[in-house]
Amino acid sequence: RPRALVYTRRPPAGALADAIARAGLEVEWTDSGPAAIGEAVDRNLAVCFAGVGADGDEGLDYLPCLNQADPALPLIIVAARDSVETQRRLRSHRVFYYLVEPLDLAEVQAVIAAALRGRGCAPARRKAALQA
Image 1 (cartoon, rainbow, N blue to C red):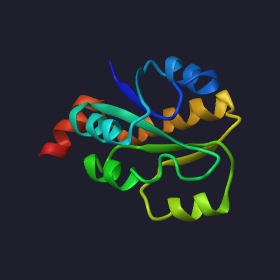
Image 2 (cartoon, one colour; image 1 turned 60 degrees about the vertical axis):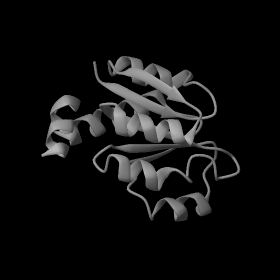
Image 3 (tube, helix red, strand yellow; image 1 turned 45 degrees about the vertical axis):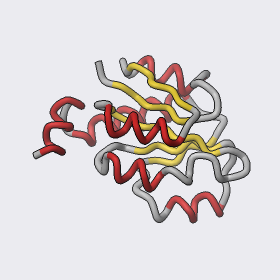
Image 4 (tube, rainbow, N blue to C red; image 1 turned 90 degrees about the horizontal axis):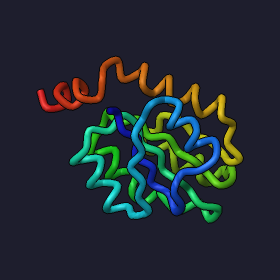
């Protein structure tokens, strides 16, 4: 079953949890940057959600490592608030999409579907392609 990694302070809830469940993805949750990197390296993930707190820092420090661990992994940012500074910092990373709370279920579902379509293959085939 495809997996979604959620790297946030709190376990996924609300629209994010609903959209992940409706996409048929199994959730791996962590609040630790090093653990998120380990999951990206060791697991076959379909998508990764990284939370950015109101201070604009949470989650961003580990994005370069997540990009490096699996360059093809779609990273979706979930920000507590919209910020020009956060958007500026994200430009230097490979980010698939930038969501701002409160989340809209339809938007999150569309983003997940686009990320999975963009993969063009099942997660297991993606991993094999990366190793080739």
